[in-house]
Image (cartoon, rainbow, N blue to C red; front, top):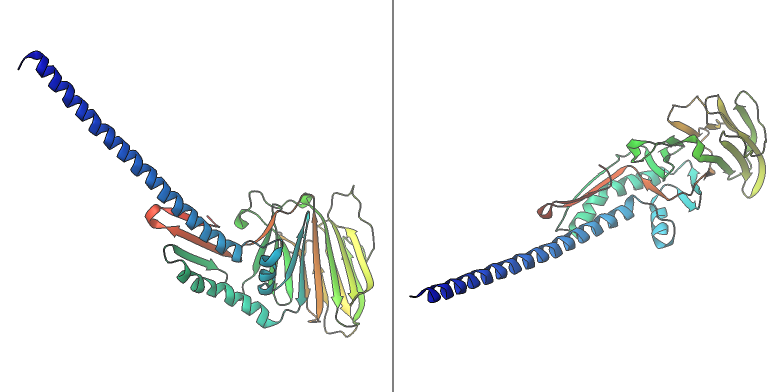
Length: 309
């Protein structure tokens, strides 16, 4: 074979080799694109399942049907509006209301797993009788349901998934309305920073938080106490019913634990409604339940979603 023939054969060989390499590269690129599409689909479907679970339990809705559904299950009512968060409870809570909520939390995973068989779902939540914590974000103030007669406001931190701990400067005012089901209010018993029961107005120049406690008999206003307070001092306002049997107590000073900002206990066991309104410097973005950890994973793709680390 002459040199020209040898050269032509080599050119043809290298062209064929290059063509196979191009085909292989195209197939590899195609497989890569298909794998990305499959992974993206798996990621989106897993994330959707996680979000559905989270919005069922963890995140409290602002409005619409989701809010109505959640309120039917929760042991309290709530309202979010711009820079305020409000919580309402009928005290003492009926025992079956609290227990029904604990049962719902514990049984949720049992009911949800069969609906999503292509992912792994694990759920951890509070046990019956444990406190229920709801975090107001971004302020990181926690509304805690302690039992059927007691609730509190807790200064949250990293254990509540907050980027920054609660700062007292973020809180403008605490407004509490206590409504008796029957005419049973006798008087206030107060010690606010060493002073008695006063009705002082809100002062924008005062950097201490403001508290106002009003008492109603049904729709009829009866009396109120209001004042800026220093939480390092002794601060409490007790409500004495006419019928005796104990007091309705509120604390918001150093009688409480360091992480406790405010606490109410219906020691008297009277049938009352409490409406607790919290006003902040900045808008409230959300309220979420801190006692529930859902983890949704798809091991084949190493995909994991969790509402806690």
